[in-house]
Image (cartoon, rainbow, N blue to C red; front, side, top):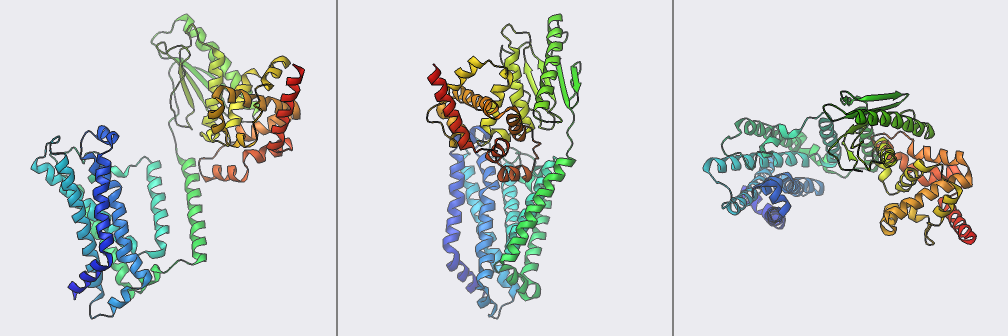
Length: 516
């Protein structure tokens, strides 16, 4: 009877089984053929490690689908349950067949990887044993995970979201799964450790695999398999909506709590001259042992000016605070080079610059800082294509907001005759087509004429709604930009659409051309 079951499974799923073996072998060949992967790993076996993270879980997922989930959903297992055979044997046959196929496929790709790396890697007997144990127990664990997962039927999505949120929570807490079994089996030492066999990790992985196996058989056998059959049915519309709202709410709550609870160490720079004014914090220091009098004067004047400029910027955009700014003077940096210190968004902005270079231009530093401060404040969302024209225009306009009328007339002439409102929403594409300098100048003209044509308060209201808003680091940022895009905020502030405003730009262009 068991032989008949095996023949039935092989006839029914032979094409899928053959495809999975080809997929694993092809995936290994594809990864091995990638020169970047080979150079970064330093060994041919590094491709096998990537395969275990990618193709092996996908293959186990497909096996769980075809052997368990699809059969219970289509109720083809009812024919087998009518045979004089215990139900646990039917499930065991499916399990053993899938596991045997999976281990065989992994064994083949392991042999292929070892054969290809025989000329460049020292293939000792202990190293080969470690590779076999690591690969085998990892594949067993992953297969058991998706075997049990397949019995969850229509609630698989819910458990997937729960697992994803759990993984994200661990990542936010700086807890890496790669440091724990079973993930440590195929961790950073997988392709290189030739002497130590990770006995503890192997035992733990085997224990987890057994627990998952027991859970899978429990779901398949409880209440005469009626639970697995019920779970395999398609989800109703009401269940889909309920689970979708629960999952969406869980993600939002998780994001809000992580943002609230996550604590980053504040940046402290010894010997820095600090300016604290309301919600503005500016610190300027020198990365040298003993600053010269010239450097000390440059540090003091830079701190005072930047503190004053950021205070004006925050007041103009109706911001209570701006990201903390840290300027580090470096003698070894080239003139005009501004180097980002790559702090976390909540820590602020750090810039390294040579303040005493002969060609150092404070105005260029201020323009760079204004742009980067707004990007940090928005968590880079101002770089999105639909927002980028506002950022480009403001950062060009802000340092020269006191420009004369004659210069304004020259700026207006930068408006191309074919410029249209869609170019604002596709700004990055337009900037690439027109050239960065020309596009920034055009955006500056748009920001300037908004105030000239509709009043300073209108311009300030619009810019504050886009640049001064506090951006949340969760789904609320996406929701706000979806429900209230830049075009809607422009209409609310100016009372006209972006299309009408672009028409006004062209009218101003024609008027300026006629005067000349």
